[in-house]
Image (cartoon, rainbow, N blue to C red; front, side):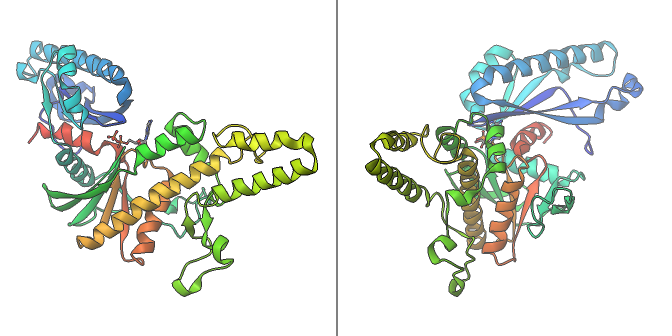
Length: 383
Ligand code: ADP
C-alpha cells in the first residue's frame, strides 16, 4: 500500500441498495512488526455482502472489530501503540443511514457517516493515484472470443480533469469531477444494474447475478432484438447504420410469438389433435412452457439475458456520452458493481462511447470498480 495510514483499526462499509461493500486494512505480520515498523505496510482487503443479508455483514464487522480490539490491546501492552487506536466503523451509502442505529447498537462502536458522492470520488482518486494497474481501457477492435489475446484490456494512466464518473450500481449516477474534491452530480438513470437483475429474475429462472452473466455469455440477442437488417433487409447506408445495429431491443419478441401462434393455429385447424400445441404457446406468455427453442420455452434465457445486457449498457453508454457532450468532458470513467469486469459489458460501454463520439472519446474502467465508495469511506478518517 503506497500510503502511510495512520490507523489500521477501522473497517469501512458502503451499504447500497443491493450490495454492502467492506474495505479494511490488513498489516503484514513480519518480524519487523515486533517494533512497530511494519504497521504502515500491508494490503487493503475487499468484501461484498447482499444488503438484504445485512446481518452477515454485521457479523463480519463484529469479527473484524474483535480482532482489531485485541490487537490494539496487545500493542498497548507491548508499548508499540496507544489506546486511541480503538476500533470503529466508517460508513457511506444509503444504508449508512438506514442501518446506522442497528450497527451502533449491535456492535457498540463509533460509526462515522460520510456522503456517498464524496466517498465515490475520493475512492476513485485514491485508487487511480495508487500506482497499481487500476485503470484500463477496452479495445473493441479485437474480437471478444479470441480469448487468448489479452491485448483487449489495455492498462492506462489516469484520465485527466475534468472527467465524468458513471457509477452503475442498482441505479446510475453521473458525476462531473473538475479537480480533486470538486464535483457535481449532473444526472443519472434508474435503468441500471438493479433493472438488469430484477427483469432477468422475472424473465428467466436465474436467481444470482453470476448466473445471469453466464447466461448472457451464451446468448444471441438477434433472436429477440429487431435489427436494422430485419427492417431494411440490408444496411441502411444513407444514415450510416449497419444491418447488425439494434433498431429495437426485444422488438422481435411479439412478432415471433404471433408467427408461432399462427403456425400452431393453422396446424390445429388441419388437425384438431394438435390443439395442445396452441395451448403450449399461450403458456409461453408467462415465461414457462410452449414454444420452439427445444427446451420447452419460446425464447431462450440466454438470448433474453444477452439482449437485456446490451439494452441496459447501450442506454447508459449513450446517456453518458450525451452528458459528456453537454458538460464538455472528454474522459469517462465507468464504475459500480454492475460492471464486474464482465467482457460484454466492457465491450458494449466502450463501443457506445466510441460510436457516439465518432472515436473522439474513450471509456475508462477500474479494477476495483465496485469499491470506490467503500475505499473513499475508509480514507475519510485520515483527512
Ligand atoms: P448499490 O450500491 O446500489 O448496491 P452496486 O455498485 O453495489 O450498487 O451495484 C449493484 C448492482 O451490481 C446490482 O444491481 C447488480 O446489477 C450487480 N451485481 C454485481 N454482483 C452482484 C451480486 N453478487 N448480487 C447482486 N447484484 C450484483
